[in-house]
Image (cartoon, rainbow, N blue to C red; front, top):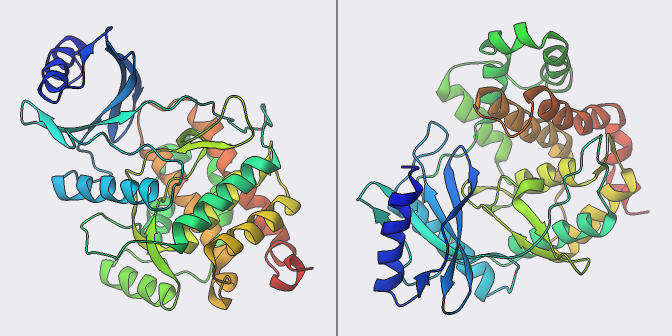
Length: 349
């Protein structure tokens, strides 16, 4: 459902039902994502701005009431118990539906700016990197009781297999870029089995993750999901917990390390050191020996997963080649400087 007139009419009835005011202006579509649609609207007489999110079914994620409620409850925990900068859903109405078809929720609109760091716009500053490390450490340090959920976790062996055997069209269209991706799969992840057998994939990944600290993870902490204060050097909000699930904390902080410790086209070793130090302090738990051992491997895994997602997705926000190049740059640097970057002794000097 993308007809704004229909959405406006149904939203107006929800606002009236829960005494949230009246629509003050036409709703504005902000995003047309792979797993959700996001709209902005204002109400009167308060003049407040809100975000309406519609959760869309897709091949990337199962959509059901239990999963969405799980996500909103976790965000509420971060907001109320940890006072972390997130947008907690307005409740009531909580989760509701339009025409009994798509699940929706309303969030407060948080004003902020995004710093999109690319080779063409090297905007990353150390305080931003530190803010992300502090957020993740706090989120990982104090979590609610874990409950079984049906959200699909990422199987990294399957990601490697798909990239090697099922990206023919991409390989034909972007041969040079694909060669760079295969360096990651063939040289840096050579010890990871290449198999399509789901049982073997799961067995190996379970063994890989054995003894790693686990909990609720965001799993998608890139530039577009973070906004900063327009007037101060501080984090305004971490957004979009759509992909969260129970998994190793290592997934969150290696992905963030790759995406938030780069300035332009180069990963900054001083940013890496500061990021890991702040994260470890805020987590109130030392990075374990196994996490140190697998840090490079999970950097490759998390970035390859983002690359595969980009290859398979349609309606990209910017050229596919540009997006994948930006993802490859930090892990290519890590491949060359692994021992220097992820030496526990080096980082503690």
